[in-house]
Image 1 (tube, rainbow, N blue to C red):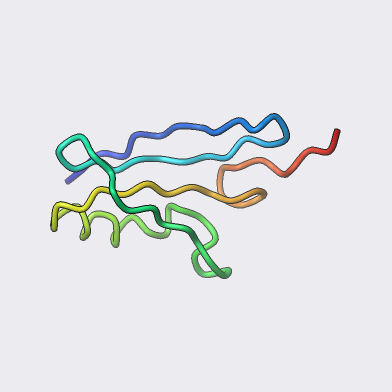
Image 2: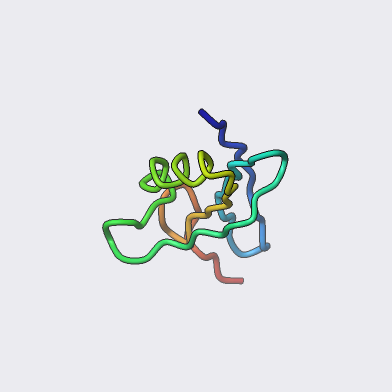
Length: 75
């Protein structure tokens, strides 16, 4: 099993939660969620583990207001 490495992207207006699932120190596939069924990156863990078993590392993030990301702040 491969371990997730969480990180955050602070844009100054919001903080986006993300993580990497590396294979051989690399992540070459970016996963972006869609509708309500996949509105959080945590829903993709089984897919990401399967991709890792095929030597494909991934990066996933929660968009604004979803999962662990903050809402967009206005100035």
